[in-house]
Length: 130
Image (cartoon, rainbow, N blue to C red; front, side, top):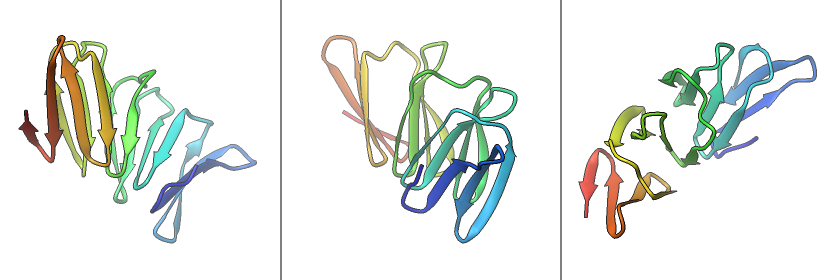
């Protein structure tokens, strides 16, 4: 899978690798669940943890790999097992909403989400907008 600045793949010999800024980084000998978008790679490590490769660094997102998440540009968003809407954006992790979110959408680094019947909110760069 290929993004704007990063690519991730499993080689023929079974190594999971990330190509970033001219360097080939070997993550390990396994075939993980993973996804790539623009500048970010989200992947499951050997222990089943949810990690992100962004800007040359790894970040632990959660202790399990979620079934559903969205990636766009510099960001990732998902709802964890406790129904907390979490977002990784530009190297930082945010707990955006600690209640059930009916629907959410990620466009570039802008998160739009719906709470309840008609409460729409926007989260961008650590700030909330109504």
